[in-house]
Length: 289
Image (cartoon, rainbow, N blue to C red; front, side):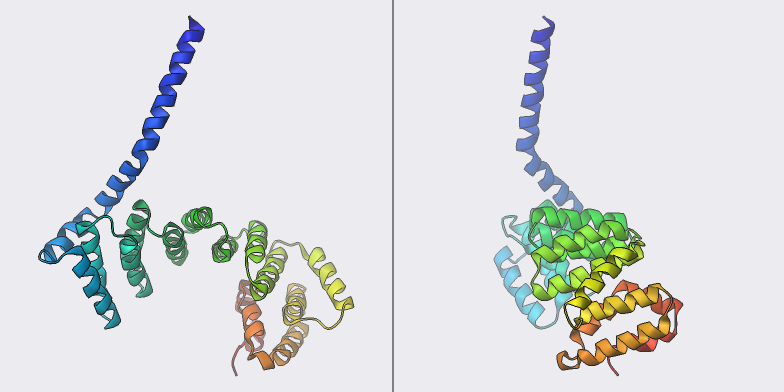
């Protein structure tokens, strides 16, 4: 009898799970609708005489003319006139994001996710908004959601790594930089691995970085990123004058590339923090004379 009761319970649980799965999309739709209900009511009222398709066309023209706020309002109204339109709330949210109205952007991007619109990018921009608010746990969640939705996009892993360092978790950042490097182009791989080395220095893992530097030196002249690694080691050791000398050499070596590689390295958090505590480094960290 007990076994029969357990079997019956399992069947009920299985049925409930199936029911929840079938209803999930509908519940997500309801949540998204409620989040924008007030905006939708006002927006559709403001454009009561226009069809969804007409609103989208006018929104495109408004955006081209620089009337981005009016374009966003038309897009919101269009979405709630025709729920089948895809990418509408995401595009409206991105307009607000691009013009630094982060509260409106965050709200619209949340609704876009609820409707399944551009889920990876919407989470990414929500992550960037969270970073701007120094809400690093929220940013981490959003970037991870973006990675889950688009696991081959290097930018999402890179952004998470940068966030972890801002949250004083350099050791955790290293693995994310490596994941970003494996997904990036050659130039992206170089900067990601440079940043992984900077994270190691921040975490106190100096010896492995120094050992790898010595191996690179045996192979020939150091590339810009490894010159800047050598400079970072000098900074870490408190030898500011040596660091400045190496940085000037790296800058001169990068002249044919208009300081692009030098700028990518010197713009790292490691040097920004170092400049705050050692004013002499500020001039050496300049990008353009």
